[in-house]
Image (cartoon, rainbow, N blue to C red; front, side, top):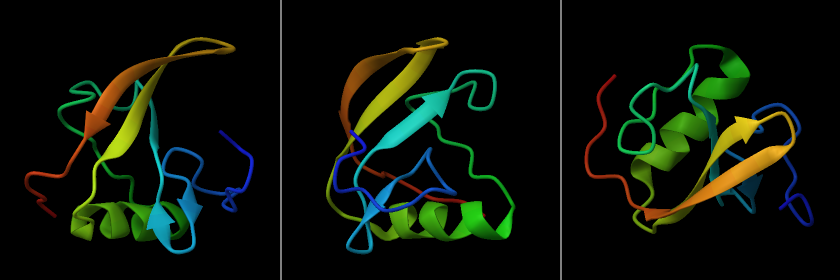
Length: 83
């Protein structure tokens, strides 16, 4: 997952060439995951969230289940975005 992805700050929405390539989410921060993604408000978090809200292509969604484990949930596409 990390190979070729350049975004150390917003690891939950990693970017490559200006496109969000995945959503790596924690249930404690995103209770409605994967159907609902709550964007944070920090300056380094807001930009990837805004980019994802404008993307038309689906992204793979992963949920962190244990300290070193991620579960693939499938490909999801943004249906609506609210600020």
